[in-house]
Image (tube, rainbow, N blue to C red; front, side, top):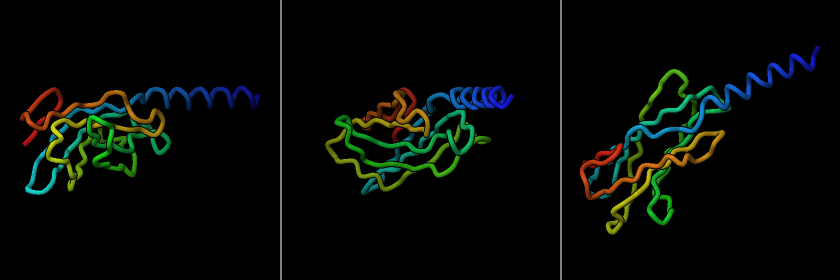
Length: 129
């Protein structure tokens, strides 16, 4: 009897974790100030609680160097999609393109990245001001 109950509970847990899937970057907005950049990133993820939630996003250059990371300290189960900001991002002047990447506790860094061309005012899923 115990093994059947354990099997059912295990299946429910595994299915709830797998339903959340990878985190999706819905929209990115960059704003330049005199010295640095601010990024507002909107994510969507089927957060299920503390064991499976979108827990970070970051800005990387085309060589993979991390330029800034925004850690998300708690799940957003009832707040989807949600937007969080990071200011003080130092993007070198010669860097014209960056990627925004998102992370969740189960799947790691999502393959769904957003390429932002900082010379343009907008593109697929992004704006630059």
